[in-house]
Image (cartoon, rainbow, N blue to C red; front, side):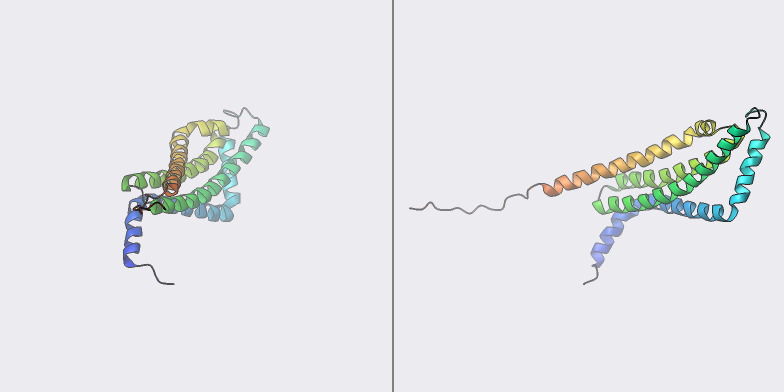
Length: 195
């Protein structure tokens, strides 16, 4: 098998260059997910203690002494923090793959950059949203209040990921349709009628 020619490699790198800012965010999202996994593995008890301390500070003022509600909030908070880890890992990997795909499709540099930033930065923002909700919920007395307080982060970041993913789907459909169109006919040969 022959190695790719320098021209092909230059062409691929040329199409990839506009996607590099989004690719950076995608890789940072992966690192965020890995980092959360490490921190959670090493410090689970400490994190849970911090969450309990936050809930204890507002036990009477916000939770009105309802220990069952506090327990539920603490369980959900830890679950949301784990969700941040899972979202970062999944969205980061998906972003890397889709960004490479968009680069290979040969879209315009501006569209490639916009899609890659939507995927990369959106994935990082949405993952951070879940972590932040987990930390804020005990002090606010519930996950609903925490999610509402961070809607400003969740809505644009999740929207960016969804819109960018939809744009990739549209680009794929366009590429498929263009590929299926019949090639233009070649020169016709004149055929003399039989006698």
